[in-house]
Length: 236
Image 1: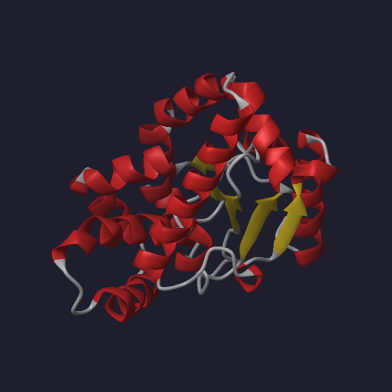
Image 2 (image 1 turned 180 degrees about the vertical axis):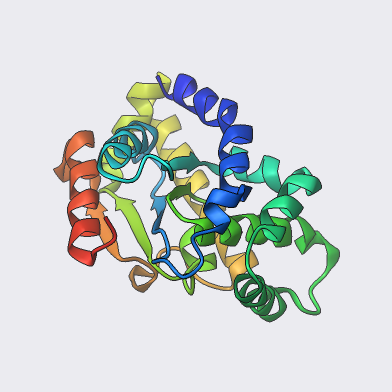
């Protein structure tokens, strides 16, 4: 199911980028900015079934001319690596949006070595998608990078280590010891990646609008909790 949804995300990439750079979206100047969501998670918390449900529910609740789309790390990397795609997205922003993006990039990347180049492109993509709105951005430090973009809602999925370890063990068919090592290793790598490139900790709760303990809710309930909070904020 996850593989099918991830394939669907990538298959829709060209269509979703075209929508976000066409005149209809550019003509929103002067109207209320469309919201966006970032979702971060501790390794072992399921995310794709949640965002699939969340996307479907949001698209039933909001304007069909501006559909919600999901962008995960593979898709975000693909946009960043294909320079013409990230340029098209950046150029579709208005002058104020581009200025704010450049200020953020100067603050983070000025004087840093070339190895940070690809993350500069990732940053442009994440901010560009957030500025366009009606986007669900998964991972890659999106909550930190887009923190100053208006009408963002930042979610962190957490769960006890035992819960996450058992999920990974059962889903991957590996031993308990292997699951412990994998969860520990992957979590450290994710934390190190975000801290290296953003100079912030992904574990800092103040980076988020909402923390959800995945062990306490079904996948559908998590989607409903997010939607309920978006309604409270007046975003939908």
